[in-house]
Length: 106
Image (tube, rainbow, N blue to C red; front, side, top):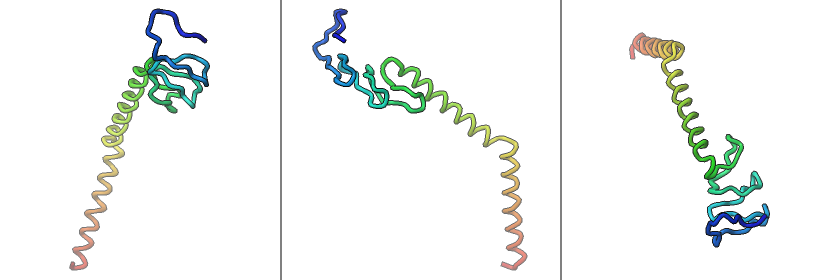
């Protein structure tokens, strides 16, 4: 695999011995995937691929979506009828314990 010949400045490109290709200065070889990725950031096990320049928007969208889902789930659990019943039940137990202390004369 040779250097691209589209008029770009290729003086800083380097050769990757593992992939046998020339890579731009912002690229790096991913040890998990075994390929060179332009703008390599990291290998994401949840997306199952390397995160680089070409898919950074998809990675950002992925993170925003699971954070929104997490907030939705926490709000849903916090304000669900089951959570209210549990809070009332815990409050009733606490009041019962306080009354028991008064009966002992303490």
